[in-house]
Length: 169
Length: 169
DNA sequence: CTTGACCTTGGATTTAACTCTAAGGTTTAT
DNA sequence: ATAAACCTTAGAGTTAAATCCAAGGTCAAG
Ligand SMILES: [Zn+2]
Ligand SMILES: [Zn+2]
Ligand SMILES: [Zn+2]
Ligand SMILES: [Zn+2]
Image (tube, rainbow over all chains, first blue to last red; front, side):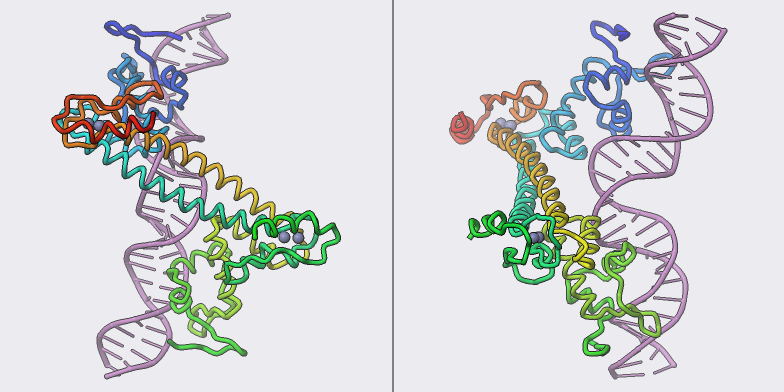
């Protein structure tokens, strides 16, 4: 790796920074195009050169992403970060809390899916027999929430797959 | 509403079916373009005419969507549904279970976000004071998972917002 | 006979966050 | 000196599921 020395720190080319932070160079160009991260300088031949400050900014972005923020939200966070004294804790916490509310909604939605899918799964024997009387298909055909457990003339031992349904009441 | 009588059932025009099932007409055209639902006939002037069978198929689609399946997955389910005897319970349950696994992964991911965001939120007073010492921003700046609770010289009473941090250990 | 609601088509747009391509210039190692 | 690895740009493509648009045809009511 070739380090270009700035005053007191290192300068990284795009590929070096990418490797260091485990993102693609494309992603860094994308972030630049969208105003999230602009390298502090360019080499004579036009190569992007990132300094330690830029690295810190990228790490900020990646941490915010890891917490669930979108790039648009991160843009907001960055503008606060660069001008902290003109923002209040309320502003920052507001961003976090509205993201939290969104995440909670999505979790609720997925939990509904989870419960429904689990019920469907539990009602089906999953055996090699014909799906003609499959409880899953029947549940999707009917308009009730009530899922009947399979009771069809499967060739295999019924005890295996009727267990599930009984245990779920 | 004008009902066109087929042999023994009703025929619905696209807007009627859309209203009845609470989808947009555009959505029905979209489903048709993607092979999920083709009206059984057309009027002389080319209007789509859906019969009871088509309605049932749409309801199947909507129920599958409500459970979290994508349209691509629903296409698979529909092809099984139309040819049940050539498929096994294992096939159907397989679709449900792989969706379930995906949903569980997404839930896990969102739960991580949720926990992280909640920790950030708890560490911030959310007051009208300067964000210069905001714990949220500090957490995003630093590379540790450890979030320090705010302890800055806010003008307001500290008891309110330090409670959270202490209660989380 | 005209208004307004409804329908037709094909194609463009939306959202998010990349990811990839093409065509070419630069650096480094051998 | 030349190949490999890296870099540049602008712009197109990806994914899912619609949603919207324009330009025009159809139909029932008054
Ligand atoms: Zn079965
Ligand atoms: Zn089954
Ligand atoms: Zn504060
Ligand atoms: Zn704060």
